[in-house]
Image (cartoon, rainbow, N blue to C red):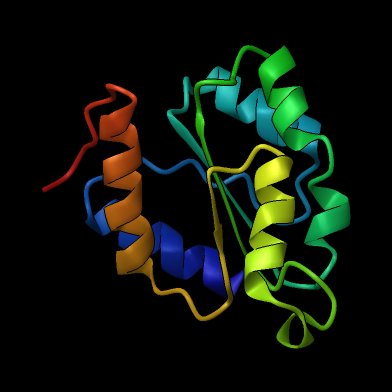
Length: 130
């Protein structure tokens, strides 16, 4: 929850409207929240190393729910023993699941914010904030 709160704070300060679905949110709950709020982006954080299992099928579920156009990011401690794996391979696996960007636990909010602005602009969405 600490990482989520830090990112939520940074995104809000950068002018984004953030809807935090909380911890241990199921894929369906996340998708429903995104639909209800007309989200332009979904950011998922995993801390316990099971993100690869938790995120399987997420991109397809988003597509089926009419959210294929939504920017999707995932980050954190995504896999068990991530430090012994090649991060580029982890990135490829999550991109194959439908995520636009995949972030390691060392990623800082300014990097995410800058990428989110670029990705939203690239999809014709006016990113909020200065």
